[in-house]
Amino acid sequence: MIKMMSKSSLNDNLKNMFDLREEFMVSLRKKFPVENPAWPLDLSKKAHQQYCRDIALRGVEEMFEALQHLKNWKPHRTTEITEFDRDEFLEEVVDAFNYFLSLLVLTGFSSDDFYEMYTKKDEIIHERLKGDY
Image 1 (cartoon, rainbow, N blue to C red):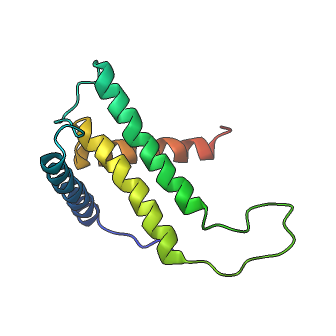
Image 2 (cartoon, rainbow, N blue to C red):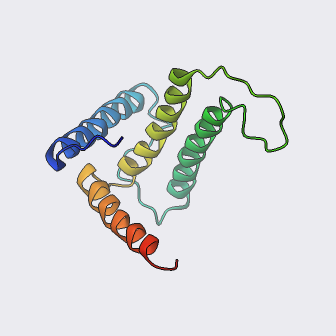
């Protein structure tokens, strides 16, 4: 069942998540200034593109860690593992999401930018589903 939230509430939560991530990133930059560049990054610079790529790949790595908690995905497996640590799975997905949030902050996008693009893309994929995409 999908729990519907008001746009205002959803946007407030998303903004809070962006704010929390940026607060962490500021602390990280203060502690390790050489390894963590100031933002927004200039994506015309090679070093900044490399840094973005590294952050994105860290997020992908965290998603792989989440996927390691899924034990029954192989079609040829005849036995089922019934244990599933839901909290550990969610924690790894949150880790991945944090890297992706960092990527958005680093490149100068706000929670409003992200929300606007998310809803725009959501409309597009729903329209595709109605058609023959």
